[in-house]
Image (cartoon, rainbow, N blue to C red; front, side, top):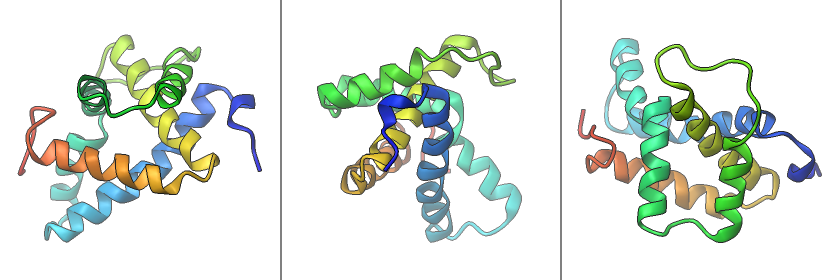
Length: 136
C-alpha cells in the first residue's frame, strides 16, 4: 500500500482527479446527456478548477470535512506546482489541486465509503446551484 504522506500533493491530485471524475461522468449519463459537446459543457460545472474551489468552500462552510480531511486538502493546496490551469488564476488552481488531493488521499487510504459520500455531496451541491451552476 502506498503511504499518501510520502507523496507530494500534485501526485495525490493526479490520482484524485481520476477518482472523482467517474462519479461526474456516471451522473451526467444518468441525467440522459449523451452528446460529447453536452457532456463536456456540463462536466465543467463539476470538474473545472473554479467549480472544485467552490466545492471546497461549500464543504468548509458546511463543516463537511474532518480535521484530517482538511489537512489532506491543505497538503495538496500547498504543493509546489510549476504549471497552472489555462483558464483560472493561481490561487483557484491551487485550491482545486487540494480538492483533488483530498480524493486521491482518501482513495489511497481505502476510504472508499468517504469518497462516495464526498463525491455524491459534490454532485448534489452543484445540482442545487451551490457552485453557481445547476440543472444544466
